[in-house]
Length: 529
Ligand SMILES: [Zn+2]
Image 1 (spheres, rainbow, N blue to C red):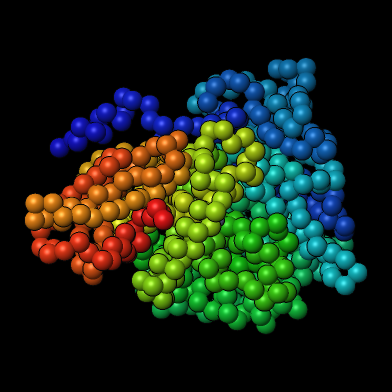
Image 2 (image 1 turned 60 degrees about the vertical axis):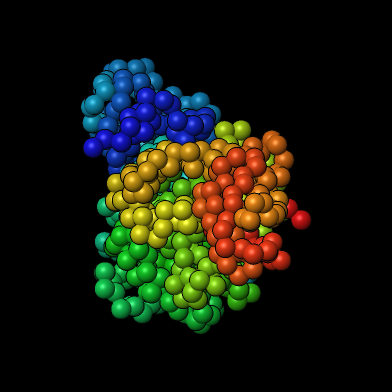
């Protein structure tokens, strides 16, 4: 049987499928083979990147690269392509345009060599008391500060890194370490290979002198994932303690909940990064100040681990759907709290998410907000805290089993690919066996939250509960199916479906003295004082 609403969705353009990003990839980069030579200061980079493409037209290939980096040579299919065009390539701002003779559907290889001083995209640590350490700092589109690539989340690719550094340093990159070659002049080359496509914002290197420790496995009924801890030597004792003690169990928990861990291994890295944590595929970076202050919370570790599934393996196809990463990681961290601390821990985590959202200016805007122009502004309470609530409310509405089935199906269907909110809504509607499009439109395209004024009276021998929506009119009204009320300790439910909803209840001899609204915290709402 085909449900009629699924047919409808294919005909009508959904507001859940908007793509407001100003730039999109021209072609499909399938694989990057990256060679980097880092000078002793680390700030100078010599790079050569071979890219395998699947062309979508005869348009030139467009790579992004910071204009401070000078292109030395460009080859197409191993040759200088001067025959076709007078110029081997063109440069305009950050774009490197490479003409070619290919057509839509063709495969093609480009090789670009460049060098210069890196201005952004790499973060450096190094002063009189500390050795030099270098960390990729790509989010959201700073990868092309040091790499020549198509810097869009929608263009995922596999990647191999060969990184040459002075012999005293170690290198970490995405994927599996293949080998370390020693060169005659006290340099080494570290080769890593990532065989699953990942978005460019998670293609990273870390260079430094690290203490590397293997973390203990958990029970691993699904598959044991080797995990390592990379820290500055002076912080290795702290790092091996509280925040990373249970990473084996965290990976195991998510593997059971969602599906097996997407990659071969996982490294947790003390790093210089502007963020508390950054979920680079197989190599999570954490802010080093949290180590020095001994304040890295397990919640952050769980959040970044959850991103390996949602963010890295399933990636938002457009930055404006960032909640598919951040809302998911925030909610899955709350579910880890529930796993270890029970329902009360989940409730506490979701209350904290609600409070952070309520007092933010994000309440005036919807989650899917085409007006956001600066990508950094997307790191807001809509995409994180309210995004987590979108999932929590959904779970409350359709139940644990439908919710988990949908989450698993969504992961399975979009693993190693990209998705929009409309894709998630469709999978969840299928899992729930009913059309949830209205819910996702409400949760993602409507700003604010319901503010409920609840009153009780007796009419004709029955108790009548009236729920009036008292939020500002610009936010609109909300549907709250199955809203729970606790009337003098007795739980009742009613479907709220308009500005004023009334329902009569039998079995109450008097107007209750105590009315609790949504006592189990299933909805992101406030009660009118
Ligand atoms: Zn995150």
